[in-house]
Structure formats: C-alpha cells, structure tokens
Length: 266
Image (cartoon, rainbow, N blue to C red):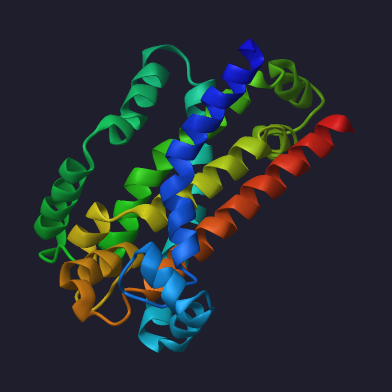
C-alpha cells in the first residue's frame, strides 16, 4: 500500500507538470483557433496545422533564424564556458573563487536587469543598442554561465593525477588538456551545449531588448502573435511548432540517456 501511494504521488506530480504540454500536443492536431473539447470533437484531428506551419514561409524563416542564433550562441558559449571552467578549476587562491562567484551572477541576476544593462552598454559603445551582434552577445551572457556550471562538476570528478601524469610524460599543457582533460569532461560539455541551445530558444527578454528591427525569434514572434490574439492567422500553427520542439527535445534527452547507460554498461 505504501509503495502504491508513492507511485501515485509521483504520477500525480508528473501529470500536473506535463498536462499543459500534453494538451498543447493534442490540440496541435486540431485546426481551430478555439481550444475546447467540443470544437476538437466537432472538427476532428488532422495534420492541417503542421501543413500550415511548413507552408508559412515567414514563420519558417523565423524558425530557421532562431535555430541559427541558438547554434551560434551555443557553440560560442560552449567554447567560452569550457575554457572558463578549466581556468576556474585550475586557478588557486582568491582569484579562482572570485571568478567562480562572478560567473554565477548572470544565473541568479534578474534577466530584465541583464537586458537593460546590455542595452545601455551597447548604446554607450556603439550608439546603437539593437543589432545582431548585441543579440548574440546577450545570449552568450545568459548561456555561458550554465556551461561553466555543467563542466566544473565533471572536472571535480576527474582524477587530477591524469593531467599531472601527462605533463610528467612530456606532454605540453595544451596537449594534456586536449588529450586528457577534454575527453574526461566531454559529457559535461555536451550537457552545457544542449542547455545553451534550450536557453537560447526559450529566451524572450534579452531577445526583445537587443534584436535588430525586422528580426524575430520564435519567442518574440509568439508574444506578438498572442498580443494580436485571433487577428493573427499563424497563431494556431504555433501549437504545431511548439509540439515539434517538445518532441525533438524529448528525443534528444532519451537518446542521450540511452547512450550514457550504454557507455556505463561497457
């Protein structure tokens, strides 16, 4: 009986968390601006919203622009965050602790504060606060600290004697890092990379404050479409887009977990 209630409690929590997402996926197969059970039963289920999504050239352009931005930000954040994590880990004394504490500020800081600060900084330096460069830098600010947080635990789990042994055997510090350290912390690097993509795709505030005129990400477009409500014909198709993003993320997580378990079994 105790085990039954434990399973029931966990299932109830998961249902509470994922019920809105499952509802979104369900109604991505219902071509109606009105979300209701009666409308779904009356119209029936179809792939019309998915057809409208891929037929809408403007919306697909926004999707590709968002994915391109997320990949650029994730690659740069992964490089900077990995190098920063290695530097923090091998630093000694107050300097390393200070840099480590500073790297966490964007994580705990309110995003609106970061956005306003970026706008003021770029307006002061370049006299233009809105540009694609400012947008990429803004996404780097919010994603790089999470890469650092993903990589540092892997560095702590690594046997420190491996790096020292490589140096003793004649390897240069750079070669020892590429040959010994990076392979050991690769799971943390991949986790930071995936987390960066997710954060970039999800971001609205930084994008809204720094994006150039005429450029939209999925988040800013969704907000604009919701503000116009049913006046925007692309609004129902956004349910299909959201469902695709959710399914892709689930597949990536499942594949990564299966790959990790396979490696552990070996």
